[in-house]
Picture 1: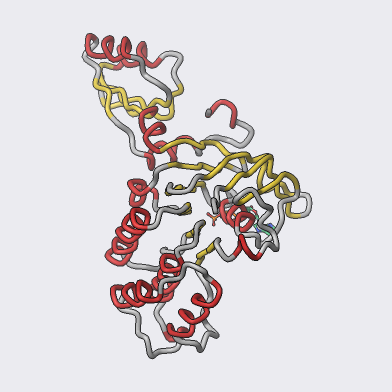
Picture 2: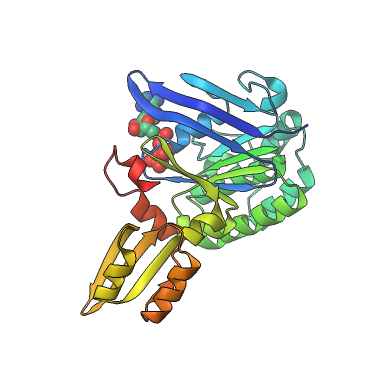
Amino acid sequence: MNFDVEVTNVSMNYKDFEVLKDLSFSLEQGLIYGLIGRNGAGKTTLLSLLSSFMEPSSGTIKIGGEDPFENRKIMANVSYIYETDYSYEYEKVKDYFDFSERYRPNFDRQYAMELATRFKLPLDKPIHKFSNGMQSALNVTLGLASRSMVTIFDEAYLSMDSPTREVFYKEVLEEQARYPRIMILSTHLVSEMEYLFDHVLVLDSGYLLIDEPYDKIISRGASITGDSSQVDEFVKGKNQLSTQQLGGTKSVMTYGEISESEYNLAEKLDLEIGPVSLHELFIHLTNKEEGDHESKR
Ligand SMILES: Nc1ncnc2c1ncn2[C@@H]1O[C@H](COP(=O)(O)OP(=O)(O)OP(=O)(O)O)[C@@H](O)[C@H]1O
């Protein structure tokens, strides 16, 4: 069965506060999606809807062509992994594996044990005695080993130290090669994680600002550096995200296609056109005032 996700005109209100605004997008099997947005942009709300923790105020969500809400067949194949409060959790790792084995049709216990070893999870301690990083590592272990067709990680790695996060990133890529599914990684660690993304969704104040393949977004970002007046002339009419001036030299970050003839012109003008990371684009594309969304597209 196919578990592609189709979101159509979804809005979400908390009382009279509209958190998500008319979102439409689709997610395909085999791709890793990066979901990024500033604090309060609506990422967790969106992921909670995809995980059927609640229903949208309007619009529709379909997974594998069906409404996932209270739909057991679909929900068994959707894993939502987030930072969990385990303060009162007296169960051990084995109990969690038992639970996943019962409810997750694709759960691989042997792989879960391998991950537990790699993350150095103590098997005989109750979970509430785990450090925060170990609790996060347990969460991602359950997410990876469940092999759910839709696997969502919502900032589930924040407490892990950077070497442990590296282990997780490597596993994400290897798992996706072994058992392709839809993976969504919501994160503030954009610079660290952007190499994982096939496709990027940027939420900005509840609007879907960007829904594009990673390579396409990156190809649109450029930093134009050179003599100030030549740079000014070159970037006239372009979407300019930031400017840095050092003496007579200027560097402007732009967002938009640069044509072949423009590349030739830049060479003639002795301007350097350099790449821009997703992290830098994200900062500058989402730092404008609310109500300014059309101008950023
Ligand atoms: N249960 C709720 N009741 C009312 N408002 C809520 C509720 N949950 C979230 N919100 C509001 O909805 C907005 C989006 O919150 P959400 O947690 O989805 O954002 P986020 O992008 O995940 O943020 P962060 O990056 O800070 O985790 C925020 O303004 C938040 O205050």
